[in-house]
Length: 356
Ligand code: NAD
Ligand code: TYD
Image (cartoon, rainbow, N blue to C red; front, side, top):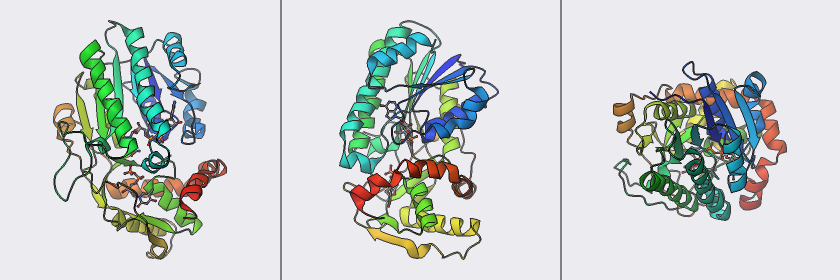
């Protein structure tokens, strides 16, 4: 089993990255340090790790505000900290934004990943015991019909600028393994939900709109299907790969938990109503079908047999429990919501979609 002294986490101020840092620092098998490199875009929020900063700041945890598009700055991070593992989360991550403005996706997701790979190649040379783990998405595989699942060898068929940029970064990572022998692993995960997710993604957007009495915009006919995984289960999968994953390999990670969007939104309506002691159907009347997303992938479904069979990973958090905890978290964390609200989280949505 591998162990690491200093793990560089990119994008650690975002949704999954911040959950991962909290998870990693809490592992009894991990006694090392975490360096969080994040440029704090609209999606990065220092509050996401305020508890970790307070307990471990300057000792086991350090934050470095840096942009992965800036190669010199990334080289400095490698030279200042004896990094022996990279867990690369930093990305532009929202499909809708990639439709309106793809440039940042190309620059961060492709060029930024390239910079990290170059820095790792330069600093690690033939160093042993190092690992570059790249966090990616199931969206690189394209869109499924009613049947079938994505396997690790499914042909890539990205259909949005977001998924195309992630696909490109996956290929770059694998090319560094084959060409330079850089020890790399890749994971492709399905849709995550849980605490600290920025309210542009489906689950938190719906919860916050319910709290504000705003319409709940469901794209198209609402029958698009996503496979949902609780964020902590994604973190445990990444940790397994860091410890035991085979270098050069890709692992699919998923919830084995497919939902039509409309059914999921109805479920969230019920769970929010239940948590607030209100009638079950209180929020359903806010559901509004709106114009579909261009190129909207119909269905994603992940086969995660490999990581289960080879690394013994399992999803631990049942969907109802995970969803209730998520709803509770948004209801209990008014200060966090206020911070994203005062940062104008709705501005982009209003500019591009009007008041929904
Ligand atoms: P997020 O948008 O919540 O967070 C991204 C973080 O990256 C933010 O803190 C942001 O400030 C930072 N960042 C963006 N550009 C940067 C740059 N140029 N330099 C440094 N930092 C930068 O995203 P997330 O949902 O936490 O996703 C994290 C990773 O997981 C992404 O690579 C995404 O593709 C992947 N992923 C996400 C999901 C999901 O459901 N959210 C599913 C599968 C894979
Ligand atoms: P999203 O959370 O943006 O994740 P992704 O596009 O990466 O899967 O969207 C999840 C699904 O929900 C997707 O099919 C689009 C749909 N959706 C809506 O119907 N309404 C919304 O307001 C949003 C943000 C998404």
